[in-house]
Amino acid sequence: MADAAAPVEPERRPAVVTAACWMLYLAAAGQLLLAIIMFSHLGATRQAYTKVLADTPVKGATDVSVAIIAANAAVNLVFAIGYVVVAILDGRGRNPARIVTWVIAGLAICMSCCGLASTAIALSGLGDNGANGAPSAQDIQRALRAALPGWYEPVITTIQVVSLAALVVAVVLLALPAANQFFRRKPAAGWEPPVPATPPVPPPTA
Image (cartoon, rainbow, N blue to C red; front, side):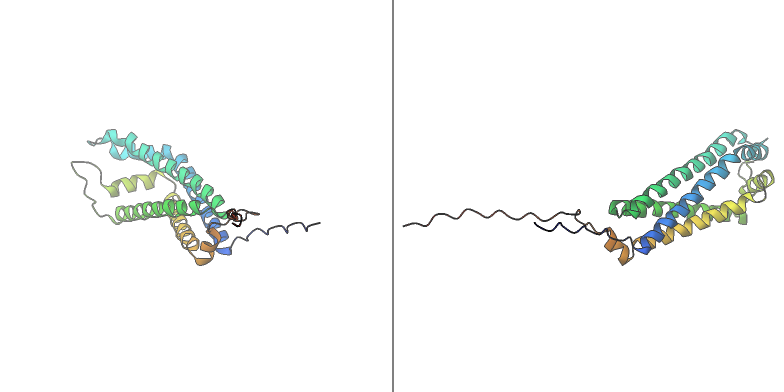
């Protein structure tokens, strides 16, 4: 009786891939928290914009401004879901998921850097002069700080920085040689390459 084939031991997931998945989970938690904070303070944000834009040529822009903030919160929620999905698939060694991770992480990093830069410019007072009677960026920031809790802005900035750092670490870890070996396409368990058919041998001639 032929011996039963030995079971194939599943390949262990490298520590760098596990760490990258946890970084993606951390980034997802940050994006979810950002969305919750932003959605929960839309009322105060609307009041701030209504006050600062009153009696100005752009007083009707309150709804647009609040809608942009709500859209940003929704985008954060979508990114949070995306990070969780790719983290699960990355942990299973799906190479297409790793490529998608690089794409969405790169996009998110660019968006986060632009958002942090625009916040820094607004807080520094650059372009403080309002055009055509419209409030300046610094006037809007002062109104928002007065309407929102004191912890709002520091917490938002901290979450953005932590999420950005987590994404950068995840991208680097997924590009390491140990991760490349794990994501390399592997044949299914028990699969053997087909044996080429042997052509028939013609009978010997007299």
